[in-house]
Image (cartoon, helix red, strand yellow):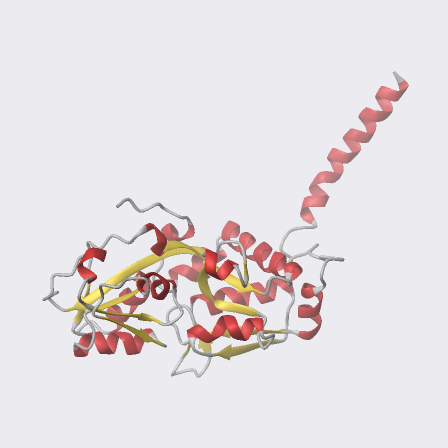
Amino acid sequence: MRKYMLALAALLAGLVALPNAFADDNVASNGVISGVRFDGGDGSYARAVRNGVTLAIAADPPSTYLDDKTHAFDGTDVRIFKEIMKRLGIEKVTWNIMPFDAMIPTLLSGRTDIIVDNLHENAQRLRVVAFTSPAYWYGSAIAVQRGNPLKIHGWDDFSGRTIGTLRGSLNHQLLEGRKDLKELKLYTSSEAEFADLIAGRIDVAMEDGIKIGLFLKQHPNAGMEFVTDYRPLPQEYGYARYALRKGDVDLNHAVSRALDEMRADGSLAAILRQFGYTDRNLWFYPVKN
């Protein structure tokens, strides 16, 4: 009986201590995630706190871009990462803007530490980089000249046409396997791609749906339009994530931890809404074809 009572007392003491244990893990008032230590491991998180990080972005609105008016970097992913850096206590942050297809080589060379312009996870990329936990969800869409004179509505209608997309993107990988296209034109920015579509130099612009929507909102008189009945292939949509070197496990865990807390406390959704996304973009919804 004495042993039973001692065991029960120990259990009750542990239960009483639980609220404090959880309280230690809350987001502190200064924005730093309390209790995140990542002792041991590869030391990449500790180095980031001590030395700072260099973040890779592209001219890729609305995700990442240089604002012409403020001359400051902005975008969905830029604002998400400013909050992540604050929560992780990483104060020295350098932003490095580059062509989209240069981001992975620059990361692997050690010149940058995290790819902040979000990427979709796929087998080809997984061979060389590691991804964080999910940030948000989106998929591909297509735009054509206003009035859709070529009657392009889906993947099968691309045959014999000139298709444009961003170099190094997931759409680039999907389209380069097609042998029935008239031409595949690759761009370093979506603005150049849309300009060529309006000028008639390409027949289809295949881009993230949110990019096309934002461009049309900003340029309502542009000579292009959404193809609203386009149904993306399953490979064309999924969670957006961020990429790090495979060896930087601690830093990846820290960033993913901050992302997960932002999804849970509503701050990630608040940022997404500032750029035209909705709460639907927080969770993956299968698209039926």
